[in-house]
Image (cartoon, rainbow, N blue to C red; front, side, top):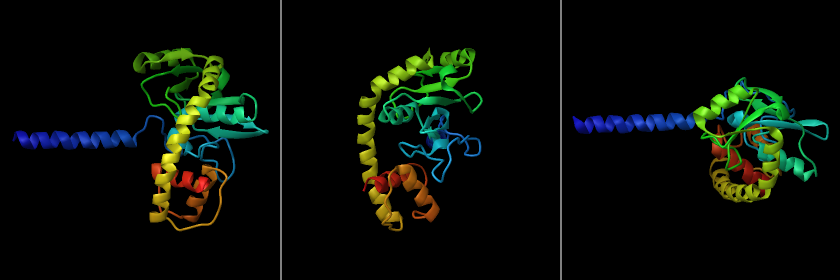
Length: 225
């Protein structure tokens, strides 16, 4: 009887763990995600190509040459802005209470909570009111900050974080090559970004119903080869 109970407990743990993986705190149903940018690749981060609804609660947006670009994280937004020799222009961020975009400079941020970070070692979640941010921090930890300080920290950590990200992406791209050769139809098409590669994969159904990390890995591989 004890053995049966232990097996049932272990099985329940596996189910719960699997469910937790499926329900990433950052993710929302694609229908609930507000996509501000346009174009065929609009559902993917402009910089790294990650699927925006999967990291929606850490989404940002800013203007680049007059057009809105949407990002999975503050890191990606700041990275693109710094490449252009400036800070983010008219930045917006998702208020995780309402799931709507708000002026990033007026938001209250909980930095370093126990919830997962995106493209960074430190999590950053935005709220429309200080009271909402305080309640979140009491429950999940973290410090409350305003945008100016947060952007300054992001810029200071950009090079270090980018080096770590590039190493992880290189490993993922190698995995993507194996997945591509095993699961996908071959193409000679070239891509300037993971977002464009993933858009093409989806449109042409190169890899069947590929999703998640495998999808990202193949996108990274095709954009780098």
